[in-house]
Amino acid sequence: MYRRASRIFRRGPRPQVRPHPVDLVESLEHAEGLDGAIRKLSAAVQKALHPGPVKDALHGVPAGHPAHPPLTDVPMGCWMSVAVLDLLPGTRKASQALVAAGLAGAVPTALTGIADWSALHREQQRVGLVHALGTATASALYAGSFVARARGRDGAGRALGYAGLTVLLAGGYLGGHLAFRQAAGASHADQVAHLVPLGWHDLCSASELPDGWPVQRRLGYISLFVLRDGEDIHVLTDRCSHLAGPLHQGRIITDEDSDPCVVCPWHGSTFRVSDGSVVHGPATGRQPSFETRVLEDGTVQVRPRT
Ligand code: FES
Image 1 (spheres, rainbow, N blue to C red):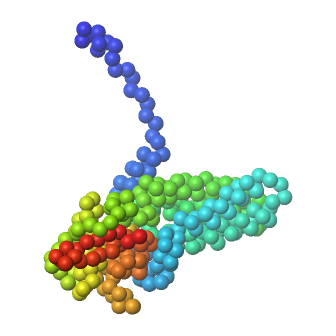
Image 2 (cartoon, protein in one colour):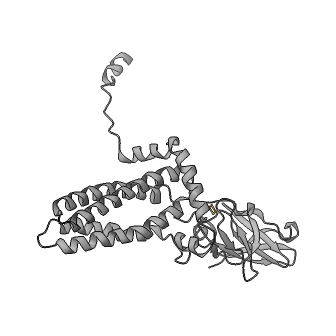
């Protein structure tokens, strides 16, 4: 009987598994051969970018989310439009103007991307480096396209444009992987609204909190940063919104208004402990914060701030 069954389920030829594009990108995440270049480039960018308003603007702190992704729409939109216009008669000037507009838009797009890239995990930086090489190559091809068109060599200009678009789309695919699979730019703070029921929750005893020194406490599934500052008790989610660094291991400083802030130990994002607002990036998303109260018996209670 077993022999018969084995005949029925005899193993046939192995099905051919074609590599999926995402498999190639996942292998790129582990391409350690890129690390030497990444270390040097990353150090150079961090040396050039001093903490302050320019760096914060490049990260997108004033906007409340990363500046790089929406800026990519400018060159991408312009150059996609060129690809369509180049198929139509009488669009020479419009195509040339859009190639130039795309090149102008590529400058802030690249600067914001480089700033964000310098403060990512290594796996993200490997994908990001190849993404940047792709988009830089696309920009160079469009620059060549612009020059060719300006010299009246429209055929060469169109060919360079289509080559640039092909490389740009490949680079854009890597950018999508970076943003949606590796979550670069997304908030990594705990989703408090989904993890903490409404109302007040017992957290700990006020007497066990050292003054001026952050500690970690747990509330159900989530880890909290807790700082006692005299009579005040400040509570934030502990996983930094940038890339989930442990805020309770961060430094406590004061901002220009003397409000206490915590500096994330991983990439230096700075949050006001009173409400989790971002003082300095690379984080752009507010750190979820909690209201606190102390009961007569000394129990500290917290509830999510809405
Ligand atoms: S994890 Fe990057 S600044 Fe906190």
